[in-house]
Image (cartoon, rainbow, N blue to C red; front, top):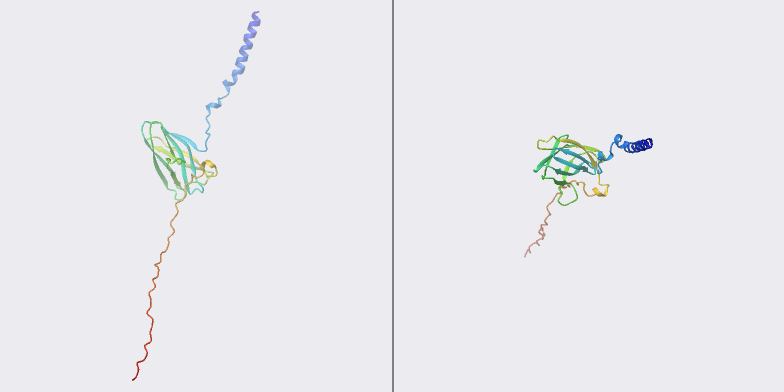
Length: 191
C-alpha cells in the first residue's frame, strides 16, 4: 500500500514538473515587447518619443509625425536635430511639450497638430537619423523611417513645397496719342 502511494506521489510530481518544466527553460514571449507601428520609439530622460516617422514624397521635404509623452512635472523644450542632406549642416528645431504626463502630437491629421518640416532627408523607404534631446538629459540618435503617402493613413500628410513666385513682367499699356491730320492749304486766289 505504501509502495502504491509513493508511486502515485512520484507520478504526480513527474507530471507537474514535466508540464511546468517548459516555463523554467523557455523565455516568456510577453516579456519581449514588439512595436506594432510604422514609426520608432525611444526614451530620452523622462520624455517618451512614440511612433516617430517621416512622411515625404521625394525626400526634399518631410513632415515628422511624432508623439511625445512628458512624464516630468514641468513643460520641456525638446530639440530635434538632423543633418540637412544637401548642405551637410546640422539643423535644430525646438518644440514645447507640456508636463504631467501630457501627450503632445506633431504632424497628424487633427487641426491642433502642428507640423515639423525637415529639409533634404533620405528618400522614402530608407532610415534617416534624427537626434532628440531636452534640458540636461542625455539625447538619443534614432533611425526614423521615411515613408511616402501610398498608404491611406498617410495620405495628405506629406508637406508640399511652397510655390516659388514666377516673376511677371508688367509692361505699361501703350496709350494711343491721336496724330493731327495733315491738311493741305489751297493756294490763295491770285486776284
